[in-house]
Length: 201
Figure (cartoon, rainbow, N blue to C red):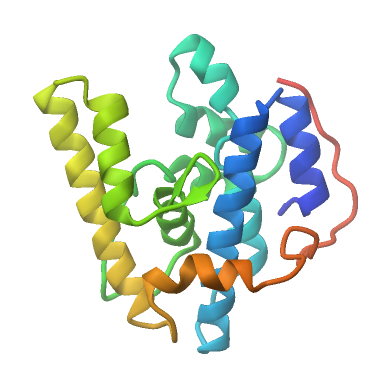
């Protein structure tokens, strides 16, 4: 099942998502939704519902993992499966690092959410260069191995960016302006499905 926007917010409450993480997730959804809508308008088969829900839910396990040190992507995918959200579990599970990437294959929802997450620091839209600088500063800790891993992941994000924007009528640097020009994007629900029970973690 794909949860509606309201259901995603209920899951955020149930799993005690911190306000800053919620605000980040909402902005990631705006970026992912903009890209997904653009691709659909260009004729690509992209599920807007899965992308929006996956973006809103991508950090569903983050609060708990900040306390326990668990892998929040893996736990988030498990939370989705436990709540019957199998259709977005894979998107949530690979939002930190993609499981696979082929620039020649069709565009997957997981690629869109993965990329959108890399374009948002806290709740601000940034470039991949700015994101790299932030990650190195916050997590690099003068550790060469961690820095190498971060750089490799951003390099992958650049390849995803090339793949997505080769098919879009706007450029990566246009994203922030286009989102500001979309009135009420937070309130528009592209997937108003029936209510789904929410279990607490």
